[in-house]
Length: 169
Ligand SMILES: [Zn+2]
Image (cartoon, rainbow, N blue to C red; front, side):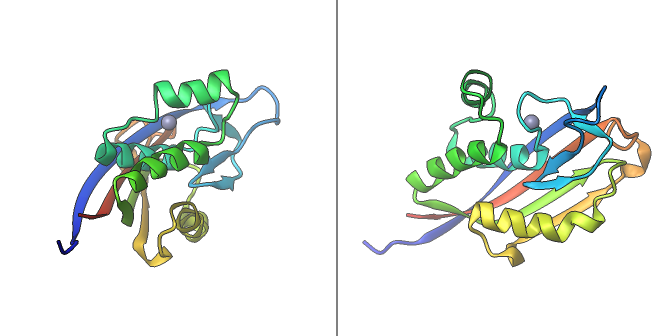
């Protein structure tokens, strides 16, 4: 039988609050695998990479194998793996078991600060590497949302990710 490629859309979301650090140690955030200088840190058990978490959730939205939650908690709290790219890698392994891969990524980030425009290109390259997707198929927009939400008021960061998945059937 002839195999064919089918395309599916899947959505993922995540948000984290900023924490004030009592020392300069551990401040700064990681978004999409890129370290960004900032005077606060993320309130998270892991490295708090809210972009990778949203993408991981989007992949789970296709595979129906949830990583964030019990599996990531075991990796993070019990085994001490705080690197969110590990959670993403497990989601990608589940995806390839279904003969599927990521074809396109669209990310929308909402926060007042830090200012993200200087880091968008580096984040696209980093995500291209982590996902094995051509950088031309990774789009990232950032908005302050006019200060209407907690994210727009500077209390944290929210990310929405819509992925296009290609599955060979
Ligand atoms: Zn998260």
